[in-house]
Length: 68
Image (cartoon, rainbow, N blue to C red):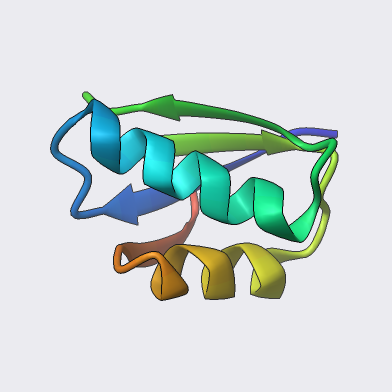
């Protein structure tokens, strides 16, 4: 099941790509979709909030939790 996370600090396509690559480095077959306008990152295939948080933080962006 897909989860949506709030990520801050993304301002361009390069940022979105960095976040996507960081999450896919944890789980290569995960599907990651970034919406720059909302700061939402949808992840399907990786059900580990802590791993997603670490990947986002390590990529230099702000992990702001699971979207409501």
